[in-house]
Image (cartoon, rainbow, N blue to C red; front, top):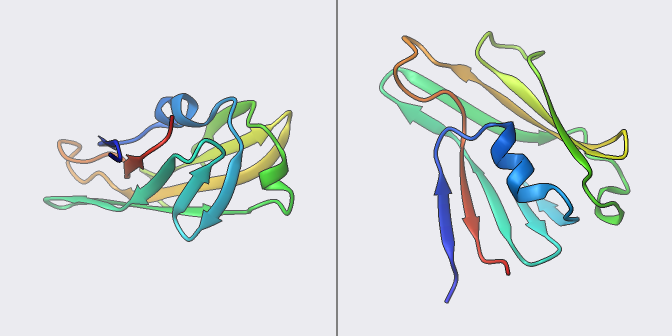
Length: 120
């Protein structure tokens, strides 16, 4: 039986919970597979007139060889409502998750969603 968990409006704390102390075994498009078999899929979000898209960027060549020790956030993106989640080993960036979008009136979505499958 594959366990599934859906996370609505993901933020850096969700990424900390899922990634700290783990290694990312593979990155295929917007799906991260961890060393324990867990898959984390970045899902674009849209609700009414608000929308957000997530993209894995700036992937280091050695990303799969390092344990994730920190997650940080910066608000330096192309849109006012977006942000970047930096996934780090020591102080080296392994990859970024760029989240861009528009919260519109602020009453709807504020980030991408995550679909988490499997794991131990």
